[in-house]
Amino acid sequence: MSTAALLLLDDVLVAAVAVAWPVAAYALRRGGRWWALAPALVLTAARVGVAVALAGSGWWFAADRLLLAVPLVSLPALVVLYQLVRQAAAPGLLRQAAPGPGPGVDPRVVLLAAYGGLAGVLVALVVTHPVRPVHAGLVVALAAGAGALTWRGPRRPGKAGTAAGVALLCFALVWAVAAVSASRVPERLNLGAHAMAQPLTRGRPTVLAAGRAAGAPVRQVSTLREPPGAPDRRFTLTAREATITLASGRRVPAWTFDGTVPGPTLRAEVGELVEVRLVNRMPELAVTLHWHGYPVRAGDDGVAGVTQDAVRPGGEFVYRFRATQPGTFWYHSHDLSDPAVRMGLFGLLVVSGGASEAVEHTVVLHELGGAPVLAVDGSAPAEGVVRQAAEPGSRVRLRVAVTANTPSLLGLSGVPYRLAAVDGRELTRPGQLRGERLRLAAGGRYDLVFTMPPAGAVALSAGNRLLVLGDGPAPAPPAGALLDITAYAPAGPPPPRRFDREVTWVLDRRLTLLDGLPRPAHTVNGRVWPDIEAPVVREGELIKITVVNRGRDTHPMHPHGHEVLVLSRNGRPAGRLRMDTFDVAPGEVWEVALRADNPGVWMSHCHDLSHAALGMTFHLAYEGVGTPFDAGRSSGNHPE
Image (tube, rainbow, N blue to C red; front, side, top):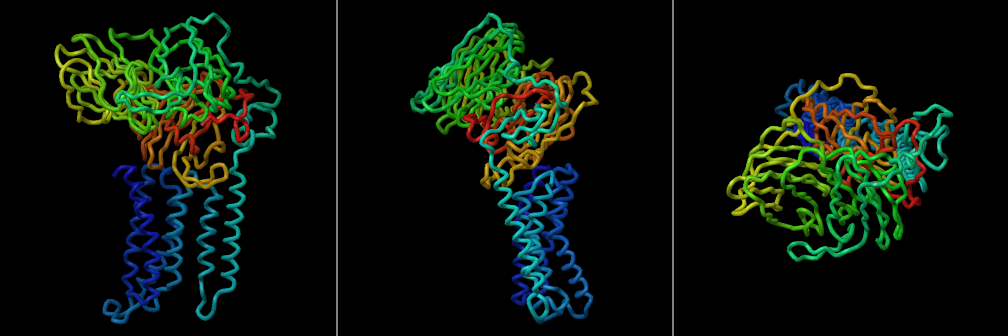
């Protein structure tokens, strides 16, 4: 059974155990027979077995279960089982006509198991990996407090137990009040606190670990920009509201660059200096430009509150970067990025200079106005089928980007093809594909290359969206196996064996406090932004990052300013695949390597931007690099 299936089964057993023990306690109180305990005991044993099986997939998946949830219910369950065994040794148990478990089973222990089962639900809701002592203490205090309050001696209520229960529940209440206060985002928060000699009084110095000797100079991200020079390419993008007419004729209100969704495709050649002037004509919304996947210098990364102040209505900002990497990339606003991108503030960036084909098409997969759409070569987004003419025998490259929050399942039918590039990086010797389906992460890009057949049509399908090239009816979507992208890239030199630093990111969804409110947030190592500890690295270091997904949501992880080399997926070595957005599905464990070769303070986050807005946002920081910009409640900057 897969890890994802075990996680789902464990969730079912959590609920079943939480119901079974209170039912057993009630049945015994009403004079039920001894076998009323059997379902609860069997379900508890199953829960223990699943937790042990999860430990085989990695301690990340089982720590909270084996250290906290399982003992709280299984220890009293063992006592109940022991009492049943002793009772079974008494003559005539199986022939017992009178109802009830007999004097050998203590109903109070059954009640403790019931509290333990309910505590398991609380663990599943709020505790993740690593198990934080404060969370463990809260759960144990609630379970023990409830048990102490209801424990009764043979003749009269236990006064000592009642007092202990009240004290434990008061502790839980005080903890909750203190946690709510501590979770509030400061009015102003500086995410470069790690670079300062002394902690910042206006921020949270514990967010980042100390990484700088006292007295060493601090470089600000605002100085890490492209040196002055005459640009080879100049663009102006104006953010403004518009009404977009879909190919079906339906009209959708949108936020746009230059009045279109997607915004204009920016094209450059390798080696050129690119200058992009952003003008904000939105009535109330601040905007920026982030170059998704492109290795710009930190000062031009376009993250509000980290690398710049957001551009307010009526303002402007000029971005400059050297086009060093050919491929398919995209840009989008990174202030309130979830609504900004969903509403249309994005476009493609294409840098030429590598392999080229006679015919190229850009294909954007998005959701607009509540419907999945595709836009081909900047045309009006369509909710269904788009047709393009194609000459038989022509060499075609489809540059496909997913700019929605969820991944897309793609299929190319009617012709054999090659997956030539992933996230803008050309693959060496890509194998031929025919009939396989492709999964493309939110934020990711695939370049598909093929030769048009002498007759008929070629179709790219993504759900109910279809791009048809050529004449004739569209071929049926492929129904083959899902391509394992990590195994597709051919093997190259052996992966590195030694790393300067190792980092683990455990992803989950738990009920936690996000800016003072309890929410089902997306967590990293049990915390949410801005409390996720960010690694502080030195320039030139090689970092191994292990990403573990304990939850039921897929997380396309995206470190800004860097690409990663995929080392393994679920323990299986990967080919020489470099990506900037990699999809970590439920139960998966990815190991990737990142070279710290671009100094700055860099955002890293899940590129399902709704997940990022609910806490799954953190940072990778360089020693001695700070930022003069602030995020926080009153800063006017909202990176997510």
